[in-house]
Image (cartoon, rainbow over all chains, first blue to last red):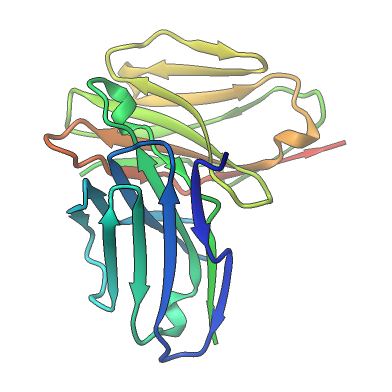
Length: 116
Length: 117
């Protein structure tokens, strides 16, 4: 039933480690996104993929690498984690549509990453 | 560059009061889309409404209503007869109709609404 799912929901790790967050959508959408929500709740886009092709890369450090094996999945791999990477990471997807529907993004439940 | 401003950082009301959340946006595009999302204490982001720049009709959905005014670049959200379950952070967002698949949502900083019993 879940539309956009993310795993894990919580991730606690040490500085310097490498970690991945997985995202899957079963809505048949073409475009997927990663957003970061900081401790002040500010939401900012990181990446978007359309049909496995990178569309948006918003000045994110290259320690962050998105990977889209197919259009239903968009994973986020983070190398050499830093304290400042602690945040909630949201995956989202939007449909293929000829109208404004393609602008509507549906979000996953979020992954809270804590870097110690 | 597009920008969304939610000037109200926090609002606290008593149940059954009406409350309006303000949203002001900036964009150079003539075609764009505005959104409201709700983030309850459980943390998920819930889509509430999308409005395109060509449609200035106000919308009502149950206790929720939205007032879109292009002349003032505002897209305000009113909750009538608020309930405790309305307590959440509410985000206003803007998406410009660029070519291809470049659909980036620019969010405001959010308004924390607390409805007290």
